[in-house]
Each structure stands twice: as C-alpha cells, then as structure tokens.
Length: 313
Image 1 (cartoon, rainbow, N blue to C red):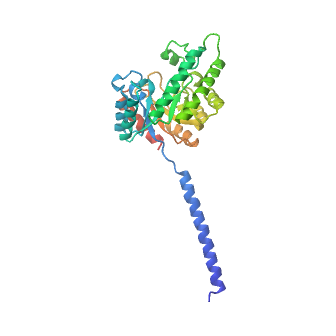
Image 2: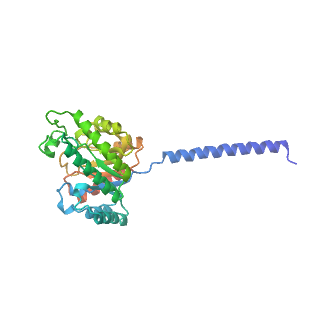
Image 3: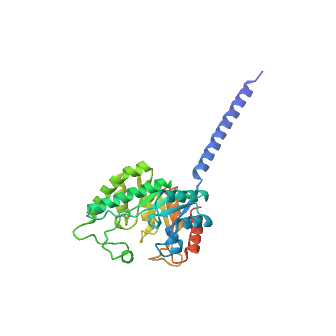
C-alpha cells in the first residue's frame, strides 16, 4: 500500500521537476533569442572596377572569381559594369556564382526621374523595369534604385565637391522632384512584385541625400516591394543617427571602405558601432562591400572583408 506521505512526496517532486523543466525551457529560449547570427558579407563588382579605374577588373566573371578566392559569401552586380545582358550571359553568371558557392545577392541600377521631360522619365521607367527583369533572370532578390539628380552639376566630381548638394533646375523645386519620383515608382512597383525583386531606394544623392527625403519616398509608396538600400558612406555628416533612422527599413546595406584614401572623400566609419545599429534594428540581410579607396582592389578589398567580418561577427 502507498502511504499518504509517499503520495504527497511524489506530487511535490513532480511539481519541482515540472518547474525546473519550464525554467530550463525558458533559459533555452532566451539563449536562442540572444544568439546573434552574423550577417553574410558580399562585395559589389564596383569594388573591383571602380568605374573604369581598373579596366583589367571590368569582367563580371573575373569579379565573381575574385570574390570566391577572397572568401566572400555573395556578389552584388553593378548594372553599368555588365558588358552584355542576353539571357545566355545572365545564366552563365548565375551558374558561375553557384559553382563557387556564392549568392548573386544584389543588382545596382542607375536611373533618374528628376526631370520635367515626361519622355525621359518614361525611358527611365522602362529601363528600371528591364533591370528588374534582369535581376529576376539571375535569381537576385534585391535591386538598388534611386531618384537620380537634377543634373545641374558639371559632373560627379563637381557634385562631390559640393557634398552632394545640388541646385534644382531653374523654375523647379524639390517638391516637383518628389512628385515625379513617386509617380514613376508607382508604375514600376507592379513589375517588382511580379518578379519578386525588392527594390532598395538608396541614400545616393538627389532626393535620397537625407533620411527625411529617403523615408518620405519609401513611406509615401508604402509597398513591401520598395525598401531602402542603406549606404554607410553617403551620409557625409553625423552618419550614425541618420543610419539608425533608416536601418529598420533596409533591404540591403552597402558598406564603404577607403584604404589608400578615398577616390572622392574618406570617412572614418566605426563599423562596430554601425553593426550595433543594425543589430538593434534586427537587420539580418547582406552587408555588401563598396570599396572606394585608391589602394589596389586586390589588397584593399581583402582588408575590407577582414574589417567587416570582425565587426559583424
């Protein structure tokens, strides 16, 4: 016969075991929640070519091979660097990356909608739609887009000399630009959804030069297919608070480095601080290196990868 004392003792032991198991479960869940998965690190083909600075590194295939040799996880393709766009070429790029164990994780396109010329805006809409289709064909999930600039600077060097600030065309204001940009992306968004490619509006001069301008465009369109491509080097003054404002809506982060001194300017960026900003924003996507230093990319890109690996570990 089991005594009353034995029944009570057994019940107490079961209760304690249950509580202990529950506590251990909570501990395991807390550990999982606290565990940080490092961001994958990719590299833009721009980092090697640097807009004709290194013509021997123009070929996308060569850039993919270098990314593999250096130990990157993925490659972002600069559209202007592509020498062909036929389907055979696109599929060969995809195959080459796959056999190296690399993701083709981004396409960076250029366009401008800051013009009163409706025909020019239409051509840029068509161009952006075509680029979305190229990304789809290569299995790329996100594409960098922008507002473009007013075109009142002499050239890009002149724009950089004025810290990215540019006067509107005579007779127009930034408000006109916002209207044209919003109307244009409204026409592009259906293709982004159809292709399954998330556009990332970059803080790349023009109307995206400030967090307020960037977020105004993204928020006004209110689409899951238009987020932000966040460039760490394009907020020239007090970047950290600005990066923090935009980080929650980032689809891709482009990380600038400047070994050998910058081609146009250099920023002393604290990547440990930037990594914390992105962790706090729960950003889990790719960090894509855009090396913009004067050092030979074969060494400068390697150093940059080491820096980013440590910061985002």
